[in-house]
Image 1 (tube, rainbow, N blue to C red):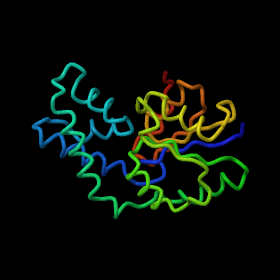
Image 2: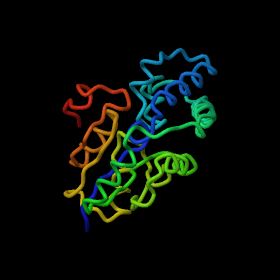
Image 3: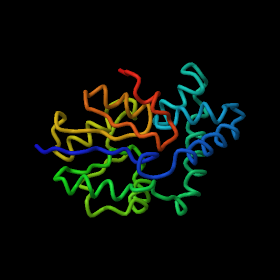
Image 4: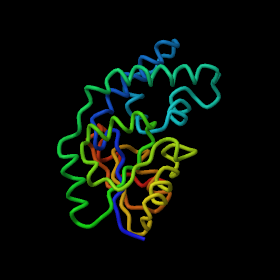
Length: 198
């Protein structure tokens, strides 16, 4: 077993939060669902399963869920070639690796998107492992993706830290009792990130 740092990717290492917000907003609009961008922004970081429940209600007609999610994916993918890393993202990963800690991307992005995000970060030389949506049954705020990242990298959960930018990241880490460093670069305030959560 080894020590390491798990990193969320969207909104933490790559500047995607507001693009996801706009893509979800337009996807909802296409199905005549009136959801404000402020509400969407606060939900970004959840997987689509949790996000749709949170924004549209758990007791909604779920017939259009697949169409909404597919529309979001298509709209968001139009920006892939223009995505940029957040300032210092690659330097941070390299600094962690230089201290002898394993660097693991704990992402629930789909594999093609993760490939693009890794290209944007441009630090594959220090990334020991990376997860994608196929590695977890449930998305964050559930801890599944973090469990997968720990298992794939052979990191001891007692010697791990998770770095993320959303309330869902903090909740996922709390469920495994992994310390979480919350970054405000995704647009969620420090006050929201440091609330006790379970």
